[in-house]
Image (cartoon, one colour):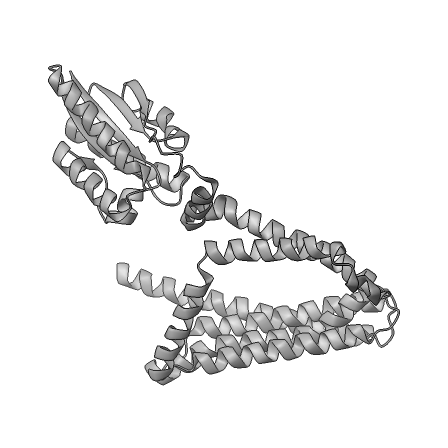
Length: 376
């Protein structure tokens, strides 16, 4: 009888932080992985989990049992992808070790989700969860907040929704206050009416700023732009041009909507989009054109997918514009287009979209034809 002490790392912290790929079989290999993970991230609980599995393996050997220890690693994308990786590695471990039973070692409920799937492949005698004792200082609220802000998994699960909720909540109530302010500017002297909204927006922004290291991202972006410019890349010019065009479109749309007088918010929104959509589409086309120009300058060819994206964006722009003008026509807004011009806009949009789809289909057909000739 051979017992397998199996350590589970469902989110692949070992692989991401040390570069050691699973499965990890044998005491020395697991000890090396635990030390490497401890050096890479001393606070990672998986280090203690692997060491606990090694200790259990040693205890089994002292009791005269035939045993082996192994660690299987999943994927940072926890779910179907990580579970498939774990099952693939488990089958490899079972094939090599040929255990009659297993003892599972994990560090929490997330890893134990996979226990039923392991039980379907090998007899499980016991499941051990490893929890690390921490001092009261480390267990402070501030420590956990900062730690979670730096954890990619926690950012996506908790930090991002909380930050966005605070920002959106603050914006919604701030807009309500601004609507009241437009008729009574004396309200600005009552900070208690808007201070909570401002604090909510600032707090949400700070959470997202810290969680996603926005300052580092901006610095790296400037460095990349500088290096790209020195290398002859025209992306910076196109990005700046696209931003300027989009800003002009937003400004003109806002000006038209603000000058609408006593119109309601829906009519003002339609007027804003009817003015700004062509500018937004032009900005996207300028942004996408940078890839075409770079390809011409550096590789002497034009990538077909970029032409397709630009044509498709123009088609979507015409269709959106036709939809906005149609709504303006239906509610009988002043200066709305006649139905004939609306149909022309929609027809141009549909025509461009059909042309884009046909072009993509022809390119896929050419690829399939080449692949079939190669197979023959």
